[in-house]
Amino acid sequence: MKILIVLTSHDRLGDTGQPTGFWLEEFAAPYYVFLDAGAQVVLASPRGGEPPLDPKSDQPDAQTEATERFNRDGEAQTLLANTYRLDQVSAADFDAVFYPGGHGPLWDLVNDPTSIALLESFVKADKPVAAVCHAPAALSEVRGKDGEYLVKGKRVTGFSNGEEEAVALTDVVPFLLEDRLRERGARYCKGADWAPFVQVDGLLITGQNPASSQAAAQALLGLLRQA
Image 1 (spheres, helix red, strand yellow):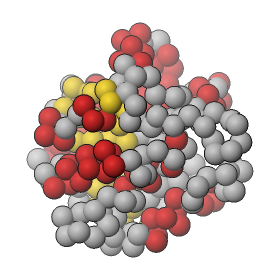
Image 2 (cartoon, one colour):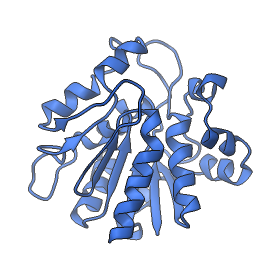
Image 3 (cartoon, helix red, strand yellow):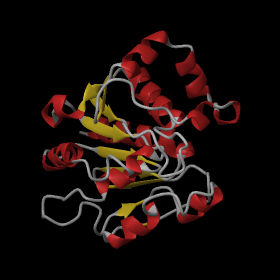
Image 4 (cartoon, one colour):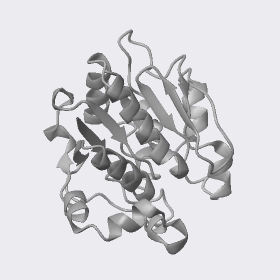
């Protein structure tokens, strides 16, 4: 198994002057799920190099077993510091793709033409696509084989309006992910705020929030093992 993980390169939270990026748990949990299953994991981002980490996701109250493992793992840290540029990777070389969230994807991955083309290549090749928390935003402009929005008519989840309100960023983000997915025709579903919640519809896997990262990765592995 060879799995591509795509992270954001965006590091500013709108006009607030505050930093953002990817959420550590949403990268670390899937990374170790895949690694422990014997998969080869490759990391990429729009700009390549080291993607920006949302510093809030590395605070003591955000630590999990996976983030603590990452913070002790020099090999993983080196890998993360040297991601490939998105235009250097091809869907043909991978069995599946996983997009971690954090607020960064709302600004760069949602409209990135290279990311959109990459995702559409995975879809056309009938390979699993997974995204968690804010990263389902990267799916919102992707088209399926029928030319319609990929998420149209599909059961998907992502960071909810209630969760965005809880972190006081409703008026900062460029759009509310729940609303955007509904606008694209998705059958948006959600669980309780901050609780693990994953939706699998065919080869499309989405997780609602950071706590859903491990379960979303395990769901992706499940699809790969069925193939």
